[in-house]
Image (cartoon, rainbow, N blue to C red; front, side, top):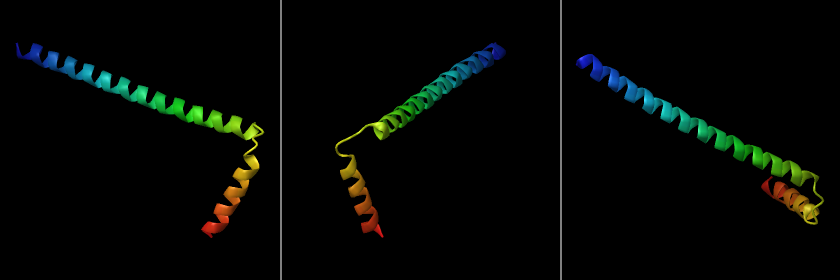
Length: 68
């Protein structure tokens, strides 16, 4: 009877490990999707003619100088 209990415990532990691995893979996939979405947004934004683009550049240059 003891070997069957050990086998059941191993099966339960294996199931838990598989569930944890699947959860980690989903987290990694979600993080990758977020990073790809941000990268896509930034790429599209760089090519868009924004009326605020010149203002953004001026503010960036100003803050860079102010930090020195």
